[in-house]
Image (spheres, rainbow, N blue to C red):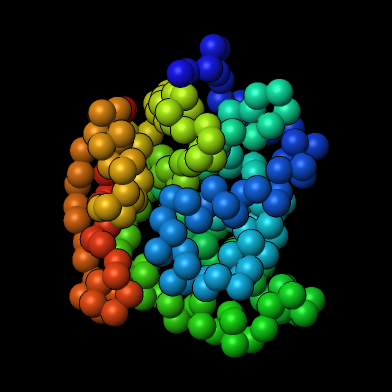
Length: 215
């Protein structure tokens, strides 16, 4: 059952701070096999996402996020930005990883392994053009799915991207993700399907779709 008058909102500074421990769970939910392969399961993703969340112009920053909140509880998020920012924000995230190591919150071996695995996984992502809005993450907590949150967040992103003059909204999604049919129902189509023989053979990765909707 949909929630009455559900809205996507920008997070206040206090809300963003309070929700910090929850964000990595939502990020991981968009592609568990990919995030677990790249970051492992020993808390590195949580540490790096938490550092990124409070730092503008990084891949997982609160400044690039809209959310659905009810009675003070975070229900879901949409995180996106201008296409070329993907590469800038990715470099800035790497700098944060180095800061974690300098503070003793991540080891050299953890980060070295992450760089190797992230490099291999990056081949699953097609180039992000300059003139598109890139939706990096869209997720709701399991107990809130089926209530129309994804539709609200995606439609808000499409409207915002159109108003800002982008020609398309694009995103990447693993082919076995049930969200593929949701995106298609929302008007997105599959532009490309990319497969890594090594990742599929050795780590169980499906192919990845680049999807888009014209604005």
